[in-house]
Image 1 (cartoon, rainbow, N blue to C red):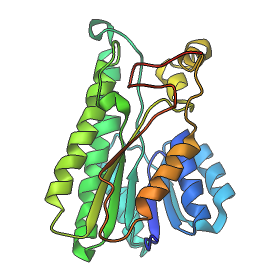
Image 2 (image 1 turned 135 degrees about the vertical axis):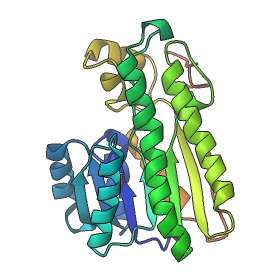
Image 3 (image 1 turned 120 degrees about the vertical axis):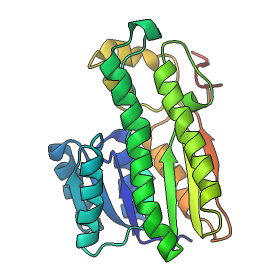
Image 4 (image 1 turned 90 degrees about the horizontal axis):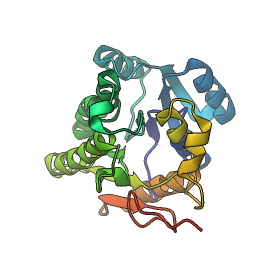
Length: 251
């Protein structure tokens, strides 16, 4: 059984983040939550009640905001022992010559840089206490590229390589590092990617029963709920009719 007490979940107001927060709360963990949307964050906190011991809307694209967020948590006397880097996302699906430069920068900062910065901050605390677990939410897109998704695929590949690297960095301690790589999950991911175009977003899941956010939440709990001697280094979770990051069987 897991003896971790406090989990920090980024991107908590999104589908997977919200599901992970709910799962951990139901299993008795205390939560520190962050998301960029204050209204959605407050609504989530209201549903989770006393399980949430701290929440703050943070612009994770801002390094100084991330450092202040970590300081705010410490000022509350809270010791986080699980960091779940869930915040991320894709913008657009287009050949690289047609991409907006701002979208490229945002995807790299959102999926990679902010994750690295938070990991650097909290890994210091974990190593000093010789205790902690870092879970990075990657994607099957990080293992096999697909057309129109080069930037997002590259960003998620970076998440996997970063996780593998820091697992080596931290292996002298009892700090664990896991990458969870979901396949097709029916959340607002595609709606955000296509900037509100619901018809285009719905077409992504046509003819297939995709994963739901709770499937990834259950995976996160499984990863955390292992003996001290065990680390689940990497787990890929796909829909039953999904063969790879880009191959699916439509019924």
